[in-house]
Length: 374
Image (cartoon, rainbow, N blue to C red; front, top):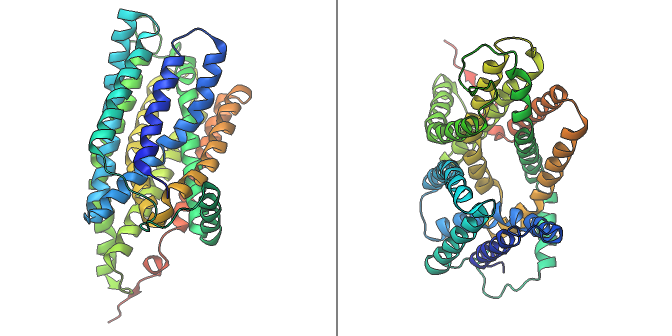
C-alpha cells in the first residue's frame, strides 16, 4: 500500500535537503539538487492531491465540497506565490543570494511539522492485506490506463496544457521586452526606463490567477444553468447529478482551453513595431493566467471523477510522464525555435487539448435533444 502521508513527509524532507544544497556555490551540489528536484516535482503534483481526495471521501464529505477545496487551494497557492516573492526579496536583501533558500528551508520545516502533527495516514487500498510491491503498483496503473482510454486522453490533455504553461513561463518576459521599445509611453507594465516591470507583471499574473480561482465556481454554475436550460427546452435521456457535474466541468475546461488558444496566438499576429503591441500582448497574457486559474482546479475535479481512488497516486505518477515529456520538448524548443512560431505551437496545443476534452463529455449528455413538436 502507498502511504500518502509518508510520501508528503518525504517530499518535505527532500525539499529541505535540496534548498540546503543550493546554498553552496558548488556545481555538483546544484546538479544533485536538480536531479532530486525531478522526484520532488512528481511528488508535489501527485501525493498532496491523492491524500486530499482519499481523506475527503474517507470522512464521507460531499463531492461538491471537494471542488471548493481544490479551487480554494489554487487561490491560496497564487497568493502564496505573491507573498513568497516579497519575502524572498527581503531575505535576499538581508542575507544575500542564499537568503531565499534559507527561508525555504525554514518554511518547509514548518510544513513538515504540520503534516506530521495534524495529518492522518491514508492509502490507495482499503485492505490492510494489500502489500503489493512498487513494481506491481506501476504495472496495475499501466494496465488501468491501457484498459480505460479516457485516462490516456486525460494524461495527454494535462500534458498539453501544462506543457504550454511551463513553456509560456520561459517566453513571456523576452516577448514583452521585444515589444517594449516601440510601445507608447507612459503605459502600465513599463518602468521609468521603458523596460518591462517584470516584478509587477508577475504579480499581475498571480493576481489574475487568484481571480480565476474565485470566479471558477460561478462559471461552473453558469455552464450548468446553460445546459439545464437547454434540457428544459426539449426531451433528453435522464441523467443523474454526477453525469451533469461531469458534463459541466468537462465543458468548462474545454471552453477555457479554447479561449487560451485564442489568447496565446495574439503574439503571432501582432507586429512588434505596433505602438500598442505591448499592452495588447500583456492583456492577452494576464487573461491567459486568469483562465489558468479557472481550469487548474477544474482539472483536479476531473481527475477525481475518472481516476480510481485505490490507484490514484500510481496512475497520476504514470500520467506525469506525458506531462514531463511535453514540458521538456517545450523548454528545449525555446532555444531553437522563434518566439512567434512557439506561441503558434502553444496555441495549437491548447486547441488540441480542447478537442480532446470535448471528447470526454458523457455521450448521453451530448445526444441531440429531441425538440417537442406541436
